[in-house]
Length: 103
Image (cartoon, rainbow, N blue to C red; front, side, top):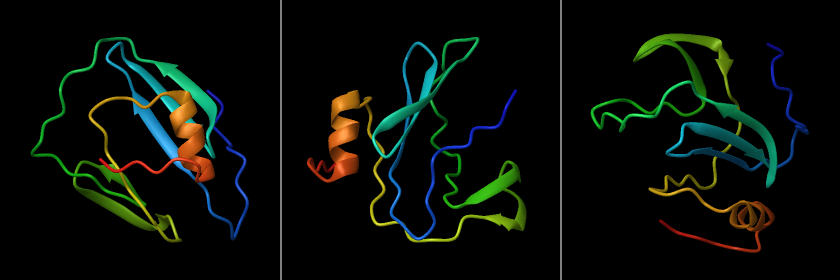
């Protein structure tokens, strides 16, 4: 299927929000706007808490296989993980700076 090309502008701040619901729906928001919904074929299982979370680098396989040309260059100002999904209006307000939430 066609690769996603979100509306990105170089040298500007970009807000990303990824959500995964209990009914296996993945949603991507860019700057507070929904740009992608993907329904998984099966219900999600709880995450294994002994796993790895890699930010800013595409992995070719679990725990490694890094290609330096696939790294994301830039700054991260805030990173949150929530135990529940935020509402679309909360995501939009956080992306615009109108709402500040701390987990």
